[in-house]
Length: 320
Image (cartoon, helix red, strand yellow):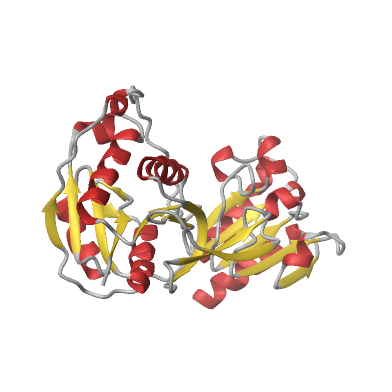
């Protein structure tokens, strides 16, 4: 069976959930070979093997932490040349898509971004995408070279499938461009204790109807009761009610959780483009004509200031 390269997204060896999803999808089309760059490979190897990696290619060098993107592309290209894979899978983050684009150009291959599903085909992997602001679903494949595919978080449930996970060192030669953009400082992001927005299984978002930064507490309370991440519409973010890092939409982050709760969000196309692939959508809005109801699986016509606190209490009572 052909091998499939899987780029490992991790934090000092702690493997992030989207990588486990990629390993699960990779097993549909071949044997996963994980590519771990940077520190923490020993800690990550056991997890990667548990989720199906037959091999773990590792490389550690200061360039991966000190410079942006290009050193990782150099390493993935080295892995590609060493393995000759059937496909390369990369998490669909901002950095992941830049890595994928650069790699595809280097190896002369086609690229598919933001896939939400993946399956084997007679002429290569077939990816499912949600396109044109999620108005259409397409199935497509790369017709030139080795497919480079980025996959949205929450596109598949991670499934353990223990494999050998043999660790091998990857020889990497960095090109002249690898040191072109240097990281000069880092500021740790404040932890809220909530899941990462793009990886969360449940997201609760607030919009213009929240009517002020001081009122986002009720959105956060519902999110905390569900163990969810907090999102915000562009209107709420532009008004300064919530940080830009939490914006969901075409110019913000794309999310695809199992459950998406939209409170006080009208459902403009810009917002819909960032959350339409959610598995179940619940809308809360006092305007029964709001476009969000066209998209919602369940809708509540009512004042969010009455509905959301009641929902929060109901969740807490059931969990209690």
